[in-house]
Image 1: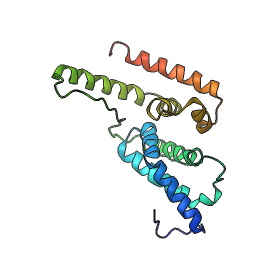
Image 2: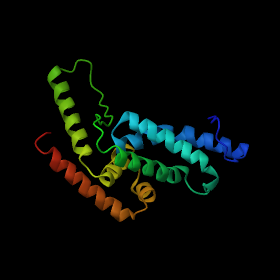
Image 3: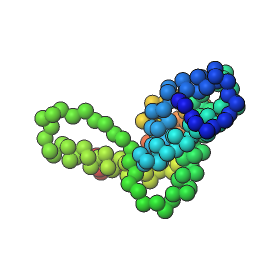
Image 4: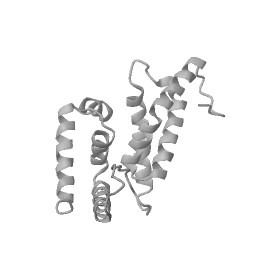
Length: 178
């Protein structure tokens, strides 16, 4: 990754290390931002801006820690700022859901699946930021309870409790639609 016009005072070794971290975490950052923001364009912007900010502050990164845990704080704060700044923005929000379907699937099943996905997207969009964050990290990003605990800086028991209540809330929102 070559960033033109940004002086950080990083050594060539640090630049190479940063490049490795970016390549390893690009998709992860995008999908995490997508889960929080619900918009492809905003997720792209947020993940790119977060990497730029991480680059500018990479000399503050402690290599004995996990990069994504450090980076996640930058990304999350950017997402929260975008949500605050774009509250009145009317843009279609979405999460990507993929379901493998046989080619011979009938039209009725496809319509029902699309309705279910739309209902789930709407239910997730109605969650609070913290609820979106925790359900996205667990169910869409497949983080362990321990990893979520580290990322959100909360005890594992709190992670499990919050997930229980978010799942219950989503179940109630989707009742009758499944």
